[in-house]
Length: 92
Length: 519
Image 1 (cartoon, each protein chain N blue to C red):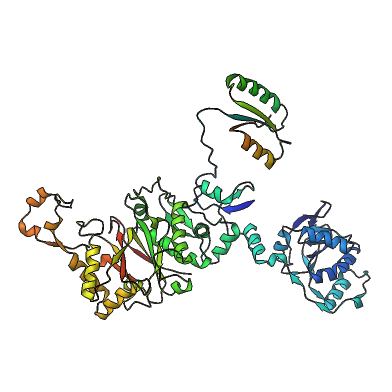
Image 2 (image 1 turned 45 degrees about the horizontal axis):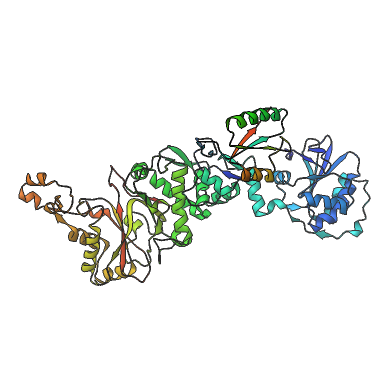
């Protein structure tokens, strides 16, 4: 990890900009279970609803090995390579 | 007063905590594995460990080395993991082995540095009288080794992380998975080009370039009206690629810009393409290796480029002057990346700019100008006489802002050595040149009336209402000869000069400001 000193007057919190939001949902959507208990229940329900409302969209399921650690790099790159959207079930 | 040592808590290889001070007497042995003298004394430290009522621990400076020491010397004493070097730094360990005896309050009772047999024997007699040591097997003396805390890069990191660190700026941790450069672009910290990541170590190194307190406020930077501390300027100087000895120039330049006279807020906010331009005079030019010769106004010299950029990044990051925010320049200007150059005083036969402005020749000075265009090249390869050459410069400079814009403000003229020689040969002083520029470029009011060919400051209707004598009155291009600022720079070859157009001048615009550069 690199640590740098803030070159600004520190009036605004450090923040990351988010990717522009697309107008439509199309292509592949990843459903990521972080392996918190019952996250799969939420994602099962979401998957069913999405399949109903967006029949042309392909839904792909993924799971982190454990919620306590960041997703492995291979999993992140696999999700990024194969999907246009990610829905992550963050917590219980 | 007894010498109370810093407290610490470190873990041994099994993960067990060991705190200092301990319940009774402690003996601390700071060691590192790749030091031959540390290896020489490890059996002695192990022997101390056998003594009753003494807690012997050895903070080792690398995790890997600790494991080797334990294996190599079959140690039973706890080797503590000080691979972060926090305890070594707190104890200001310069040389290892460093062995310290301390009482239950943490007060020092004795210490050994390196290996001096007589001193070690006395230490044993005092603190471990029962220990059996074959002293004949030991040499009389062995020097210690440098502590890892003395490694220059490590020392800077430790100082930056220490509780009494001079650094106060917010620390931003950039995740391992993030690209540092992309992160800084993303945060809007850069001018569009990559910057050097301002790590605490680099900022600390930069601060060594000035004697000023890192937290002293150099100026208040608009538009945020944010305090520019020496530390914040150092952060931006690191990002710009500066070396520590560039920092005093940046500090002086920021002082100059943040005056009511210079009016940096207006300079940055105007829709005209104004930018601060810095001219450096005095002995510091040579000391910093600034380029005043070939390509002086271009790229390629670190000091010229980085100092100007450091000032600009400070205005952007600390002051909050950003294009699209309060920076509203229609076109912008490449000088908004950087523009800083020195006068070639030694080549000039004229008084240098800082002396003209009231400083001593031996002073190092930075002068800030608000300039909107340039350098505009003046091509005059034929004229050899001073008056003729000065006329060519004057006629070209008459185009500043608009050929019919008269009674104008400041401009900056850079005279090349070849042109300079012609002026010197013709007996021209800087003031003679100024007067020549004014006289050849002067026009009557009648010539400034808007007509079918072009616009002008006087409408035909207004002109028609004026008496003939008024229209025949002569107007000078520059309101005062003092508005024509002249320096000498550039390579020996080339019959050119260059000039920069000013911005709105005077109390309602910007007045050039000089500041002495102090260490």
